[in-house]
Image (cartoon, rainbow, N blue to C red):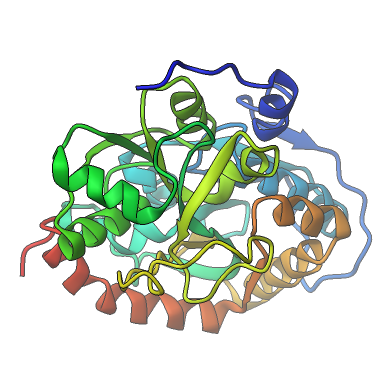
Length: 331
C-alpha cells in the first residue's frame, strides 16, 4: 500500500467550511420580500449531515437569503444519527407552525424498510421543497495503482475484503451503490462508514481506505490532482470530467440517486408551506449558492411541495426491491 500523503490544509479547510460550523448558525434577517406568512420567531432547521460538510454549508448559504426574505433568524442545528434520519424524527413533537424544519436525506425513505421507526415518511411529515442532490462516483488517490474502474474490480476479486472503501453511512446511497457493484461483478470490498465527506476525505488521503464511493465532496481534490475519479454512478458522463466513464458504460448498471430536501411537521397550513417553498426557491437561485454547489457537481433540485411528495411516495415503493436485494430489508 502506498504511503499516506499530506492534505493541503487550505483546500481541506475550504471543504470543511473554513469556519467552526459545529455550533448552530444564527443569521439576523432583514425583510426583502412579502411572503404570505411571516414567522414571529427564529426558524430552526435540523440538519442530519456533518458540520462543515457540503450540505451544512449549503444550508447556511440558503439561510442567509431566507432570513432576509422571511424577516427572521435561521438556525442550522446539526443533528446526526440514525443513518441520517434523526433530524426528521425530531419533527414528531414539533408544532406545525413553520418554526421547526428538517433536512431530509434520501435515506429517510429507505430506513423504515429495514429498521423499526416511530415515524412514517409518507404520513408524519409535510413536504416543503427539494433542495439539491449529490453526484456519486468512485474516487481514489492520485497515487493509487488502480488506473481504471476495471483495475479496482480485478483487485476486489483477487483479494476479497482486503480493500476498504468509505461512504457517508450504513444504508446510504454509497453503500447501496457498492452492494450493486459487488453483486454485478463478483468483487468484494470492506465498507467503512463515516459521518460525512470531511471524515472520509481525511481517511482516503491518510491511507485508511483505498477508495471513496460517495458524493462529490471529493471534487476539489480531483481538480487539484490529489485524487482521480474511476467512474461515475450517473446515467450520463459529467461534462466537467468528459473522459471519465459511467459505470453503465463499463457494463455495471448502477446509478446512485441521492437528492435531499426540506420537511416540516405534519399538518402545516398551506400558506406557511408556500411561503417557505418560495423563500427557499428564491435563495436557491442566488449566485453564491449556485457557485458553491458547482464546486461539488451539484445543482438546485427544485421541487414544489406536491412534486416533492410525489417523488417521495414513488421512491419509497421503488427502493424496497433494491434494499431486499442488498440484504438490508426483508420481503
